Length: 424
Image 1 (cartoon, rainbow, N blue to C red):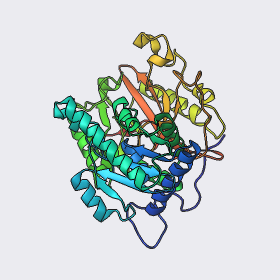
Image 2: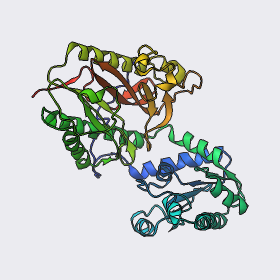
Image 3: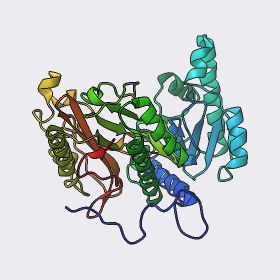
Image 4: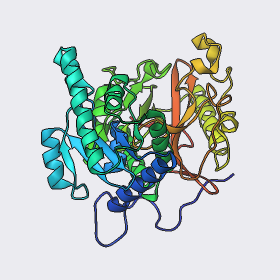
C-alpha cells in the first residue's frame, strides 16, 4: 500500500481566521463532533451522557478544557442534542459571554477532584457528590430524560451511587464505548488541527537546529524550541529534549541541565503540544556534528522499522497484522532490559492514536495487539514511533499520520531520510 498524496492546495494554510479562504471551520468542527457523539450515544441506547473527562467535555462543547481540579466542570448531552454545562463561577460567567453556541451554562458543585479531597471531611465529600447529583438530575428532569439511562464517563462508585439513590439508571460502560466510537475517527477539521500542530512542531525542530551547539544546556535549547511553539499558537503541555548519554535508554524522559558536547546525538519529543486541543507526538533526532557510522546505521534501522509499519496501515487491516512490522524481542534489545516479553517494553516501539488526548484508539503494539486485535478505519489518526541504540547513545524517530482510503497520509514533514546534522 502506498502513501496518500495531498491534492493541490490541500493541507496546512494558516493559523489565523480569515474570510477569503476555507481553513479550519470551527463551527463545523464543533457541530460534527457533537453529531458523532449523539449518534454513538443513541446507538448505545442512552437518553443522556454526563461527561466529566476533559477531552470528552471539549469534544461535545468546544470549551478549552486545559485541566482543572477535577469535576469542577461537567457536561450533560441529551438525546435531543441539548447541552447543559456546569463550571466554576469565573469560568461559567466567562463562557456565558464568550460561547454563544452554548445556551445553558450553570454553576458547578465539584463532586470529584481537588475540592472534595482538600475539604478534609468525609461529610463534605459526601455533600459535594450529592449536590452534584442533584444539579444533574434536576437538569435531566427539565429536559425530560430523567427516566432514560444516563451514561457517565467516570465510573466513580460513590458518585454513581448518588445518582442511583436518585433513581437514575447509570451506564458507565456504554458511555465509555459511545465516546470511544465517536472520537476514534476524525473529521476533516480535526485532521487539519493535527496537521497544523505538526507544522508548529517543525518550527520547534528548526529552532533546535539554530540553538543546539556545544556549551548550550538541554534546558536552554528546549526553551528556545518551546518559545517558537507558543509564538505560533500552540499550548505546550509536554515534551522534552535529551542529549548524549541521556538518549539511551530514554530513562530521563525530561530535559536536564546537561551541557551538549561535540558528537552528541540530540532528540526532541514534541508530545502533548496542543493546537485547538489536538495533541502532537513527534520525534526527531539530531547530530551535533558529523554522525558516526554506528549512529547512521542505528537511525536507518529505526527509520526502516517505522516505515515497515506505515506501509501496513490501511482501512481493514488489523492491529495484530500491523504490529508484526515492529521489531521482535531481539530487535527490541530486550536482553539489555532483562525483559522476556513484549508487554514489558511499553512505549519503545508502538503506534498510538492522536486527538484531544495523546493516547486514543488505536493502539498497535506487540505487547497487546496479537491477542487483542482491532480493525483500522479510514480517518483514524495516530503517531508511529521507533527507537534504536547507537553505541552509548540512541536515536528515535516518529511520524504523525492519518489513515486514508489508499494508505496513510503523513502529516509530519520534517526530513526523515537521515539524522538532521547540526554544524557548529
